[in-house]
Length: 241
Ligand SMILES: [Ca+2]
Image (tube, rainbow, N blue to C red; front, side, top):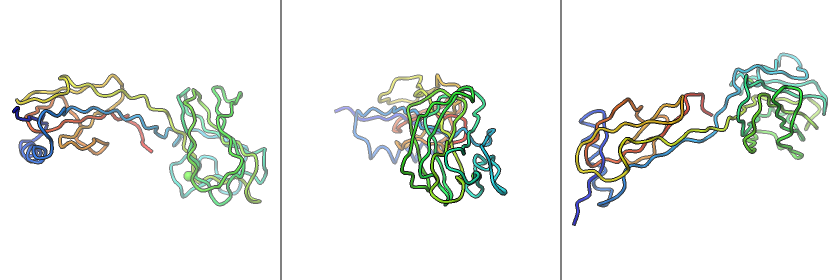
């Protein structure tokens, strides 16, 4: 019977030893170890961008809707269908969602509209029975530069009031590539990890767990020895939701 050997990866010898001891007892012989993953979750890109609104009341500058704080808010004048707010993303971008953090004075009815030029708007989402609170809106990835919340009907007598409005870009991150094929290895090897996507960092684990933004940062190259499972993930170097 063939004895199972696992890929080992570690920056330090002590870590390698501990990891090897842990994984050896967990994985059966002949198991594939190199598991690769890509992160394709959307991420917020509207924070701090230029923002425009139909109006604002009191100390509720439109910029407060995209300042990244759910403790500051924008509120429109007290009208139903003539009030709106939109954010300028700076360039045409693949957008796939919006998250609205309503204050008590929310919209009973509203639309999410997108535009490439700030003049011609396309409705990508409509809500005719808004509930307020936090609303996560997802739609098919759409190329646009401007994203608008167009009010239709208020829930209360006050204006539309948003703590925050987050616009999410559709991520297009490819799976990281290992310099050796996935498989079982019985001797020490050097492994390089790369990505075809620019502007990413690669994080990895050696204990079989799924890597995330807190895992070890990959720095070329890494030495692996037996008895460890290597997994890697590519993450965009941008603010994350
Ligand atoms: Ca805010």
